[in-house]
Image 1 (cartoon, rainbow, N blue to C red):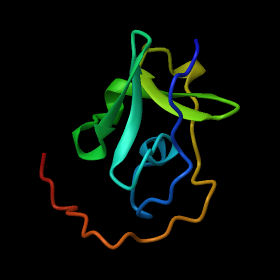
Image 2 (spheres, rainbow, N blue to C red):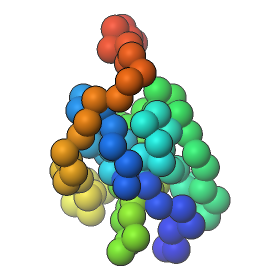
Image 3 (cartoon, rainbow, N blue to C red):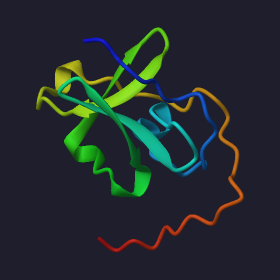
Image 4 (cartoon, rainbow, N blue to C red):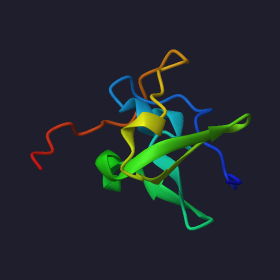
Length: 94
């Protein structure tokens, strides 16, 4: 699979999910690739249960979860995350 856009080279809030941090294009958007097309999606709109991380030498994107947990990449917070100036509401009761 060819990855069109790569995320993960930006600093995000320390409480951001590791999969979102690995695919971050900015402090509040991520790269999502579906059917060969790549989109910039707001982090707040991404359900990480429906996606998994795919990476190449340049970075990572979220792709639809194939249901096979044995091939999932588990990203770690490689870079030290820095707090962002923007307040992040963590009170979502969904």
